[in-house]
Image (cartoon, rainbow, N blue to C red):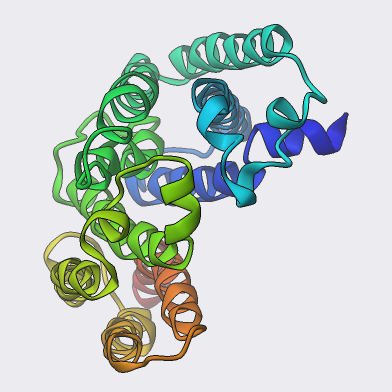
Amino acid sequence: MYKKLKTLFKSGIVFFVVISAVAGYGIGFPVEESFSFLHFFAMVLGTTLISSGSLALNQIQEINRDKKMERTKNRPLVSGEMSRPMALGISCFNMIVGSLVLYWVNPITCYIGIFIIVLYNGLYTLHWKPKWMFAAVPGAVPGALPGVLGFSAVNNDILSPASVYLFLVMFLWQMPHFWTLAIRFKDDYARGEFPILPVVVGKDRTIYHISFYVFAYALLAIMAPFFVSYYFLYFLLMIPFALVVVYEFFKYAKSKEEKAWLPFFLWTNFSLLIFLYVPLADKWIRLYMDVFRYQ
């Protein structure tokens, strides 16, 4: 049962959502406040529940298309190992309980969580993804909000530069991430009758579109000091990673090898962790250095 639930919840994505929310929590945390482990744990628990519930609902919504695709044919709903009513019950339970937990954390955090579910399951899954080749662009909005969700748990100013940075860095990351994966599994998406960008316009044109987001993503990382705290890790990690992502993109764009996508895909994913956690680390390192200096 554990393995079935892990697949139903898309545990890898849930993990990524949670660590993004944790980064937002740390970046938004007021330095003068005392840390509450219970509050932090509730944010993590609520985020885990709503994301796993939303992703489970996504599998219920896409079950007929998943049956046609090679990479999704072993999902528990497709294979019949789990019934739709059971999956729906688990999904609703997680989303409702998760929303209540997040409401206790901060009502704004709960509202952001509900907004994510409405956008992802209501608009993206049902209307944009099945009908539009550029669905990934507006569909990146709910995927860009976990950092803001974590930020809002400790800071109501969700329009602050730091919160805007969290949104933008996750938004811009998603198009290179998803479209690169979509190029790799283009034939599978075609079997599932998803009109994603590589299926409609082909690999070369998709790479052309990816380029705009790669350059904007790298530029945002380099401009991070305009949005968030920075210290020595910004120079040691963020600038090099931004340049490496651009370099790996050019390698991928020029290569004709079948596996050329993988290094760029991995560097892009690793870079997001750097771009989220370096500002967090720099914020607190700089604070402790300042305290030490004036003692």
